[in-house]
Length: 95
Image 1 (cartoon, rainbow, N blue to C red):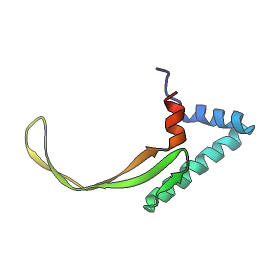
Image 2 (image 1 turned 120 degrees about the vertical axis):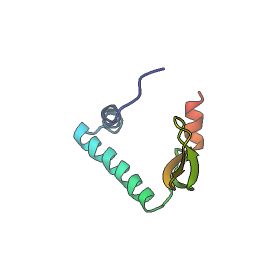
Image 3 (image 1 turned 60 degrees about the vertical axis):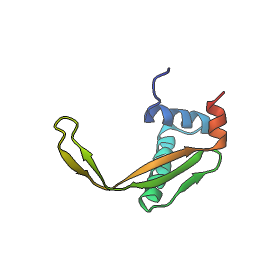
Image 4 (image 1 turned 180 degrees about the vertical axis):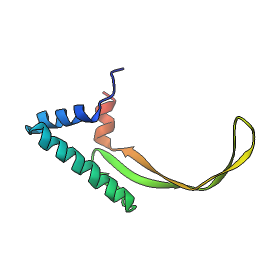
């Protein structure tokens, strides 16, 4: 398995693919991430046809146990982000 793609490598790939300067590609990548983050913070679904969908999900509060001590504890309600890949992404990955 290859090493993970970090943000700088993603920016370099976008710059090359779109024939942009790395600085401009960095601004574009930051703008896309910012727009997705802002939409999710406002409980909006972000649907990128063919790529996938980002959506927030709320986990209900629950009772749990500390695995070390066995002591019961309350797990508060939390919000997480879920991603469901689109058809094109699934096909590209399964090749």
